[in-house]
Length: 281
Length: 194
Image 1 (cartoon, each protein chain N blue to C red):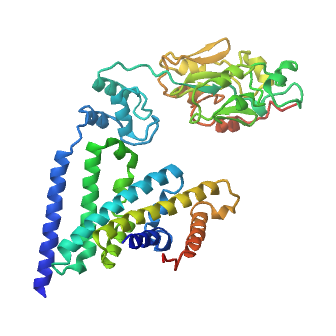
Image 2 (image 1 turned 180 degrees about the vertical axis):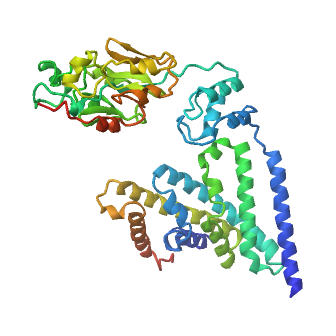
Image 3 (image 1 turned 90 degrees about the horizontal axis):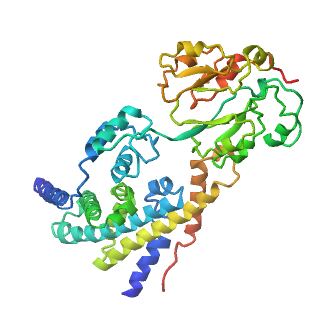
């Protein structure tokens, strides 16, 4: 009996050993030469395999980098630091990331005072021809969705009467920027962390009467910024993206909660201010 | 001889279909049947591995286990052989046929321990097939797997547009349609060639 068991043990053990040896030899014989830059590249990438770069994972991105089809700096998780390391390994210059996304520079919508009740075609161009549009503010979003139909990627929706660009779906084709009659949608760098959600150049006192949300030009953000990146020009805060480091301090200090992360929804900011003063007439 | 092979083929594809009649390989059947092209990739990998597994396990069974009267170790020995074989084939393909390697993709290592692959080896041994019969049985078993997977993938693609209650979303509706598909295949039971 015990002999049988030992017999089986020996046969299977030898079989396993033989197969293992064959595999070991085969792994040497059939070894595929990998690019020697692959390993250091994988080491300096975050390794989260999040797919944020548009490739299946960090190793797929590294392969694309070696093949030259991807740029260093495309990794949104590692940011500029990883981009620099990657560029150093590949021996190329790190290009400034030029990917753009659309951003709606208005938070007014339902909370902005209206001149009249518009009940025509649901098209911003048609509304803009009727006494310059229904909103008292001549800079704000009309909220009728011409940009929504212009967007081929379904990235834009109207929320609380104002257009909202879903950052994840936005490809930066900027069709909406061309189509908006109010020029309220503007291109911003894709990785920009802060944006000013207002386009009004009206003076604070004038603006207060018609919109309870917009930028008053109070200069608080300008004073807060340590990097000289945000300035109030013509009664409107404007960000210089070459200098902005995305620390978000201006967003914290803005009394109107207008400066926000473009990747987040602005719904919270709008709800926080309340729509008391700017009732639709 | 030819009629015997035809019988085995018909049996493996329709009458004794691995997925829908024997309920083997259900995991990939539900896992990769959402899209037609992934289902196709998986199917090709299964055909490939099942044929190879049939060939090599036949050799191990007839030349090693039976002469030594170790038939009771079939399951263990077959797992060992299939796992090593798939690894070896993967390495070989990566080096020699990179296009096929990338086409089969991650499915090749995934089905190393698929029960349909082990099942075909064990069933071949049980039926005491000759070498050619075992090879045909493995290949046709893979074809049967392909047929079931592609049918089910096309059903699931259409299901996306169907109007069914919300509580059925996802796996429940997939399992219900799989059951109906299996019911349809029951119609083949008892089918014989000549």
